[in-house]
Each structure stands twice: as structure tokens, then as C-alpha cells.
Image (cartoon, rainbow, N blue to C red; front, top):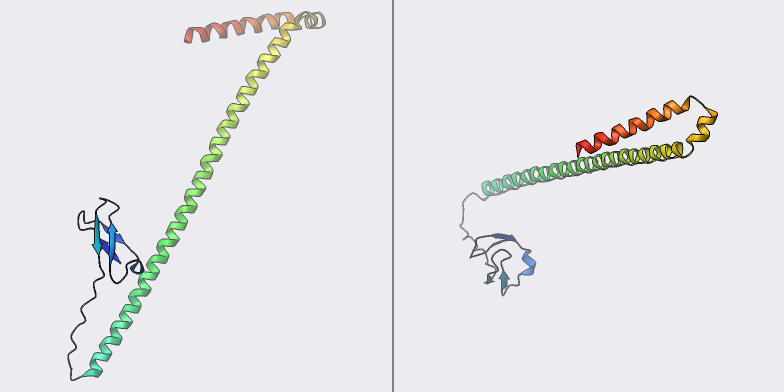
Length: 163
């Protein structure tokens, strides 16, 4: 049953069983107005005697058949909407999963990058610490280490200039 607030004209769908025959107070969820609502009995139509009752019965059965077909159309429409909603929710779920996978992949990339930089720094420190024994074993390594240190100094100066 649809009830309209007399103040703000907002409509509410309320279960008919929640309103007793003697009526009850209702409060609008929008404007907080409280009013008394009583069920209104529909006015029964006055019956008229007609000469051809068989024609009226045929018309009534046609109306019932039309109502049944309308009900079937409405049910079909509701089912189609439910299918579309479920398809939409599954596509949203797959999109959210793909976004989560992309975020994990990008976070994995940065994790690997950080590990690589730390490992490279540790290798350079190790080479610097043990350069004398390495140069004694590999005499040509002295020139390579000197070039490596000069390259690192240049990179350091480049980063400082960017700041």
C-alpha cells in the first residue's frame, strides 16, 4: 500500500498488515511530520441488473485473461531485470577483481624494484670493502671499480641537481 505524506507529498510503500482497522499514527521519514492514518474502505459499486448476463460473464473472463497476460508480462519484465542486475553484479565483481590484480601486480613491481636497489647497494658496499683482495686476484678489476665509483658520483650529482 502506498501512503503519501500530507506535508511534503513523499510516498511510502507500507505493508497493509501494519495498519490496524482503527488506524494509527505515522511519521514521515523525510520531514518528520506525524499524522493519523486510517484505512479507507473502497466504496462498493452499486449493482445494476442487466438483461444479458452471459455477455457480461464473457467480458469478465476476457478481462481476467488480459490480466493474466499482463501479469505474465510483468513477471517476465521483473525476471529480466533480475537477470540484468545479476549480470551487472558479476561484471562489477570481475572488474573489481581485475583492479585488485592490477594493484597487486603494480605493488609487486615496486617491491621487486626496491629489493633490486637494496641488493645493488649491498653489492657496491661489498665490492668497496673487498676491493683490495679482488684487485690482487684480478688486476684489471681496478680500472672497472674506479669507473663504477665515478659513475655513481655522477649519478649522485645528477640527483642533487634535480632537487
